[in-house]
Amino acid sequence: MSLPDSISSLISALSKLPGVGPRSAERIALHIVQAETAIVKSLADSILHAREKIKFCTTCGAFTEQSPCAICEDSRRDASLVCVIEQPMDILSIEKSNTFRGKFHVLGGKISPLDGVEPDDLRIAELEKRLTHEPIKEIVIALGTDVEGDATSLYLAKRLTRKGLKISRIAYGLPAGSGLEFADELTLSRALEGRREML
Ligand SMILES: [Zn+2]
Image 1 (cartoon, rainbow, N blue to C red):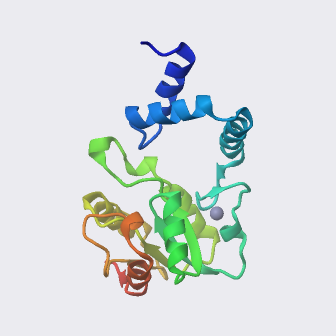
Image 2 (image 1 turned 120 degrees about the vertical axis):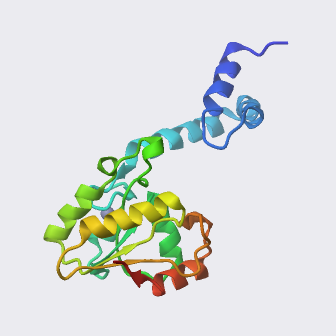
């Protein structure tokens, strides 16, 4: 038996989503075609609504509906302290640890020549621009502890070095070779408190 075209194309669209294999795509598609129309419509609407609403904060690079984002706009946060992370979702991990009251800067990846990611592909120039007009005194680098994370941290430390700016990196307690998303809140808050100055 071959499936009707509309189901096949739904399965093929779903299977392009991250973490959704062919079997799950099939299960989800079959669920959708049997669900109430109103429920499916509301799902489709939420997907479209989220996609249309969400943009990147032009300052820090976080996901936001309004740029600058709520964290960049929050005057109660310490503007002299900026934590550099790889992905927008890393902000969530650090916020959950409840130990960091500074601001953020999303790099958008790590330097990885093998994958074709060069420094120019990352939001480093944007960070340098922030250094010229924000009262930043310390940059806390919170990238993963894999080879690319190490290389990128070192590159940043060298490139961002300037008078009166402290550059530190979280390290303590983070499992070697992994990213922030795998660290629990306590580990992350200890890693932030135990950050060490680079260079
Ligand atoms: Zn922001």
